[in-house]
Image 1 (tube, rainbow, N blue to C red):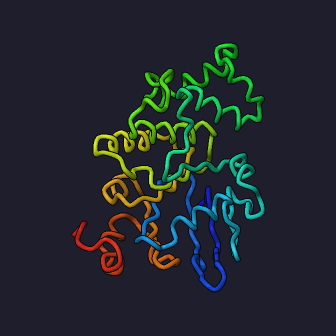
Image 2 (tube, rainbow, N blue to C red):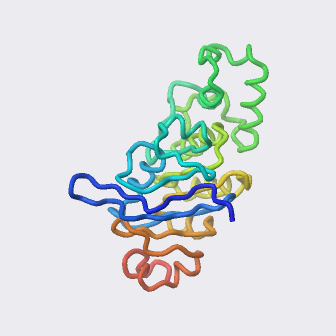
Length: 249
């Protein structure tokens, strides 16, 4: 099996405090993989290590079989790794189309001044239109991000990440703060992603996790407790004791 993302014995210590403890994790090509765990399990630290925000104390990170441990955040994006954040990272005074254009221009390494008038670049305008149409966001293209609902903004953030043409998409708690109807909108978007994009989702919404993920990794105290199918995770007594409790019993 080929792996889109592979983590081998990853470690991170802050002084004498070991936060990531020999974590090994594989995300298969085309996978729908979830990372769950209680607060303080080390999920955010792991994501920051993968994306290059933090440097590991030991271990390896491979993207498409190649080591990326020494690459910057921008270089990892160029290699096909994209991320959304727990908190929106959009430009609220720009339109949705302009936000998407900015991501596309950044990916292509083009001159950002093209954003002064997108209509002067028919090829870029067409790419933006096709991208938003594919994600059912065409009707928001000319709206300011600040005028969108919170749920719509989270969907647009996923659209921006996808505009970077990732091979691996990391979703950091995309359902945080969303109303039930917006979670359904997010789930529909995720289910419609092509198999060419491998997804690793970090999420507390267990209903979303169990409806979307094919593989789930449980992280506890900086270590991998279990990786398995949703059914295996649901039935594991250790997971129930430390995290799931009776919510899925």
